[in-house]
Image (cartoon, rainbow, N blue to C red; front, side):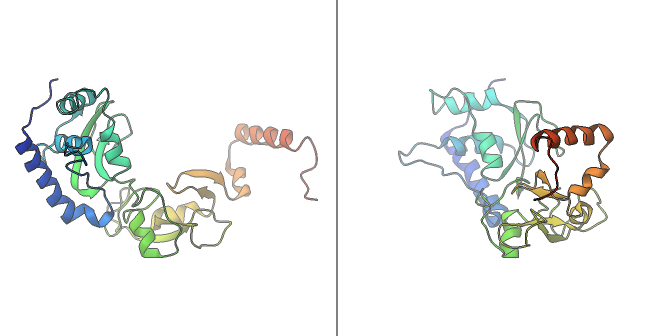
Length: 244
């Protein structure tokens, strides 16, 4: 599919529209607005990609990477492969759906992109990209976009999995074996926080990285428990596991 050609005037008009939505809905979440021009007075690739993805908003269309690349080549002929759409989403906070990533809001083919909305940030976006170590509950909630770190439900809105329930964020441990203090706090909704029962250790993205409660192994099926036993037996060199 050939790309839609736009004049500089049309690109600027679309960029100004993006700015309006950004100021009204996204700036408060720390979403990064790409610069229109770089230091050499050239249109930035990020701005070009975002402009193209927002065409026709709110009725945006699915766009192939080839189409995006063709559009950017009109300004940067040496461009081989456009990666800006992916970076604008996860790193900068724009809700751009990438095909083949288990999306539930809209279905997009693998390798394609579509802007979902200009009124909410990308669900997994965290202000500043890296999570600062702080015990300020307001700061932590802001860093996670006021969403549950586990399921993504937004504070004050209907829960993703229980639509009749209003989402309430609670302080949760990243590592239940450590104090609920700076660097060890993630926001979880009342459903996710209750269900975990201090079983898991999470990273900043609320991905399970360790088991916090060894007793939970008892809930695993026999084959898994046997594999764990063999690993530990080999690790401890066939010695007693009794602490010295």
